[in-house]
Structure formats: structure tokens, C-alpha cells
Length: 262
Image 1: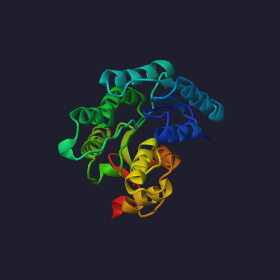
Image 2: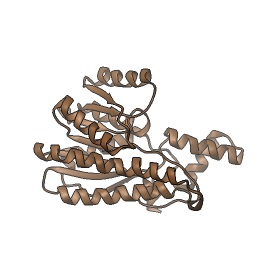
Image 3: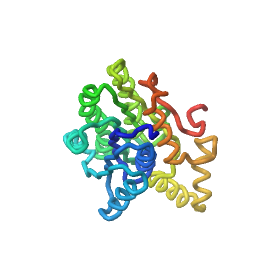
């Protein structure tokens, strides 16, 4: 029996990285998938059709711009129109920029807060009424270890991710007893395009190899000295969608190789 057969999952920022890993794991459990994210049309189509072929589910792509609240709400509305329901909302879309706070560009601050935090608010506000009508729903916000601890030069990202954990707690309380759970997953270093850029920057700054730069990055924060795999984040999300997690709500689960245990 596929645990999520007949369910519909919207996963933002899911054309690569963590979001794609989550989408594939949910599809493997039988969920129909609404992909969202950027990329070349041909590559997105290959991802979409591959999910359908490999898992026997329906998959569509919606290019809604996560910078715009109305577009995020439209993404959820379109999913309900196309599939008749939305059962799972995974708020994963995110961007990054690093600089000391006094040098942090205001436009980068605004964009990071809009995509990493406000888009989740708009998605949740749009999805909750439908989930309440169904009497069941799962909302998973992909935060970060930076939703639990801070790091230098990441003012906007850390602020947004801490805000996302706070939003998770509030909506978890508001939805308690309705059949809807709301949780945050907080990954440590995952080898995504965002992290690849940080590895490249370290390699250039220290004049070391990409491999040594990756170990340098892990050694500073992540005691396991291994990257988290997107599929491992997806597995945590799938667990939160299972009946075994019915009483887990309003919490943040770290998947970080021991980062936040220090």
C-alpha cells in the first residue's frame, strides 16, 4: 500500500535540490505532485515526465513567482482546480545572499524575506481552508539549521528561517485538532546549488580544492562530516505525512548531522 495514494502535494522550489528530493519521495509514496521552480523548460519537462513515469502519479509544473504573494496563493488555487484538492503543502523555496549586516543590500533583504518567509505565509493561508474542508492536511516548512541557530553574514536568511519556525508554531497551534499538522524541517548542509556556491567561494578564497573546501565547510558546523541528502529530507517529510506523526505538530525537526546539538 502506498501511504499517500490519492493525496496531492504542492512542493515549492522543487525543480532542483532539496525540493526535488522531497517531491520524488512523496511521489514514490503515491502522491500526485505540483512542482514549482525555475529552470529551462526542457529540463523541467524532463523532471515532470520522469516523476510520472517512475512513480505512476500525475505531476504538473506551476511557475508561480514566490516573490509575489498573489502568485503563491494562485499556485494553491490552481492545484485545487486541477486536482480537486491539496493535502500536502511543502514550503521549500529559498534564496541566499551573504554580507555583513551593515553592508547588506536592502533589496536582497526584501527578496530573501519575501521568498524564504512571506511565501510560506501566503501558501499556508491559501491552503488551510481547503485542508479544513477535507479534515486532513500536512504543512511542512523547510527551514534550516539556521532557523535554530545563527551564523555571521546571513542576517536575512537567519531572520527568515527563524521566522519560519515561529510561523510553524503559531499555525500548528491554530490548526490543532482539525486533522492538520504543521511542522518545520531544519536541514544542515545539503549539497544543493546554494551550498555549491559557498564551497566554490571557500575554495577560491583559501586556494584549495573543491573537495577540501567541502570538508572545510562541513568541519566548521556539521559533526557528522557528511552532507545531508535531499532524499533524507524527503524521508523526514514523508514521515511527517504518515499516521505515525499525527500528534507531531508545531515543532521543528533538525536533520543536520549534529549541527544544532553543539
